[in-house]
Amino acid sequence: MPFQGCKKIWMNGKLVAFEDAKIHVLSHVIHYGSALFEGDRCYDTSVGPRVFRLAEHVERLFNSCKIYRMEIPFTREQIFSACLDTVRANGLKDCYIRPIAYRGFHSLGVDPRNCPVDVTVAVWDWGKYLGPEALEKGVDVCVSSWNRMAPNTFPYLAKAAANYMNSQLIKLEAINNGYVEGIALDTFGMVSEGSGENIFVVHKGRIFTPPLCVSVLPGITRDSVIILARDLGYELIEQGIPREMLYIADEVFFTGSAAEVTPIRSIDKIVVGEGHAGKITKSLQKAFFDVIEGRAQDKYGWLTKVY
Ligand code: PPE
Image (cartoon, rainbow, N blue to C red):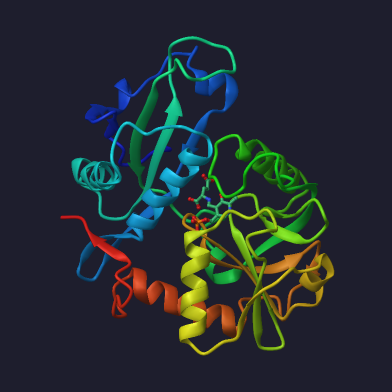
């Protein structure tokens, strides 16, 4: 059953029953993809449930909306609280959190100005994004024949629903060809990101990740892993990555709120390194899970108490 644990959904300031969280088929968002959203996780740490980098997720939501001239009729503080309230209302400890702002029901036509901006927050228990064994064994992926959005077409710094039509092309092609996920290049042929994850490449002891100008979502997990890698003393370089570097890399891994830190064990059927999570990937996975599971000190204030 999808949406396990989701009993109540926050809709425009009120908690409503799962069954009642509905919108009209003539809502602007359905026809024109006019929605900006977030995805975050709450972890059941050793000291109780904690939401990971909630303030940064709320900030990215507001930035996404700003790019699209969509004014959220709530403050950042209200959306921040709404996320925590929704987790509490559902009594969950370990869950995924999905806030979304969208152009609602009034009239159709591309001009959205007459449609209200509605906001909802849903939470549910979402298991391992790329399969139950992905974190441990790694995943088999391909390079997609689809590129990420070209600059000045669909803004990629915004987490916009419409961008996920491109993600769906990448994902469906990958699955149809027997892979778990696809890695997209940008329009100039440089490595960009997965359909729902950022990517990191380890080569001769140094860690590389594409810079934000290569059509990537500014991932909050990406940012966290960059910080943790530098804390561990690794050289972390944000630099353009040519496709073929994926094939000769020692290690490659994905990051994302849903995907967490997932090793990649083959790309286009070429084995990455030794075909399982490498040393550096493992040390970053450990550093990341130590923080989110409450074993390490939360020195950057990434965790927000829920109850
Ligand atoms: N790139 C894309 C395209 C992306 O969708 C995500 C998150 C990331 C990078 C990583 O960003 P961050 O979560 O801030 O580290 N993808 C979300 C949605 C996945 C879905 O299938 O829905 C997520 O991980 O929540």
